Each structure stands twice: as structure tokens, then as C-alpha cells.
Amino acid sequence: MITPIAKVIKSKKSGSPDSRRDYDEQCVRFMRGQPMCWDDDKNNNTKVGDIFGFYKGGDCVELHRVEAVQDPSHRLPSWSDNVGQQGRNVLMLSCTLCIIPWCDWVKFGWHASGPLLGTQRVANDQSRVQMIQYINAAFCKGTEV
Image (cartoon, rainbow, N blue to C red; front, side):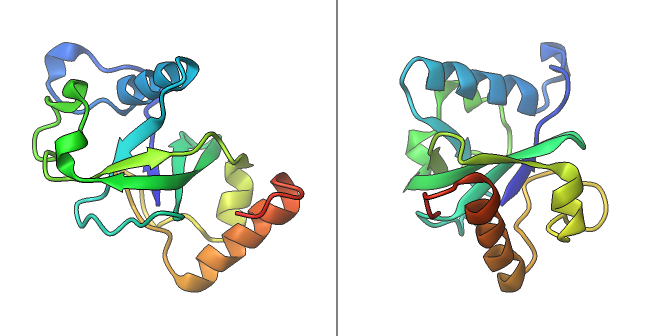
């Protein structure tokens, strides 16, 4: 699964979800020894061991492993303003597995067609297998995903 992270923080007055603010909050949590977490997609289909990526605006995708899946009661208090997302599970994420340059992501066809406006799944089983092979070969030498 991949979710876009905005390049800049939105004004709090906008009242809409802010991926940059949420991502920065997770980085601070991680630096404090707390796990990074994110909400699942609207179907809550993510499982432990799945790969989760933060897409950073045409630059790269930062990959994490899903370590646990918690029910919506574990949502962070700071997420209460994300209207329409209250029923989503909470994904507990590993430290960064690796960072894939966006040009490689596109070369292998892992991106969705059209603009990436929200959390999306990698298209098919073959793409997922290829991605794991790429991660293991290029970035995680000796540590299998």
C-alpha cells in the first residue's frame, strides 16, 4: 500500500486531513521510541507483514513493514479531525526498510495510473512479488522482507 505525503503543511483552518503534519508527527513519535502508525485504507484489508509506503511527491517511496493491525479504537487523538476516516484500522509500522527512488518505482510499474490522491494498493500480486525481490536485492542486503 502507498500513501502520498504532501510537500508542505496545510493551514489548520482548511479543516481537511494533512498528510505532511500527520507524517511529521509519526517521525517525532519514532524519534521518541514510539512506533510509527498510520490509518488503513477504507476497506481495512491490510495484514501483518504487508508493506506500507509513504510517497514523497515524485522523489521517492519510503517503505515500512506492517508490524500489527489495531482496530479503530487505537486511533491517535490527533487524528480526530480526519472526518470520514474514523472507522479505519491503525497500522503499526516498522522502522524504514528502505527508500526507493520514484524513477525506479515508475520503471517497475508499481504506481497507480493517474494522480496519487489517497492511499492505494499496489496493483497486483506479480508487482508485489517483484517489489519484495527489489527490496531484498537492492536495499536490504541480508535481511529478507
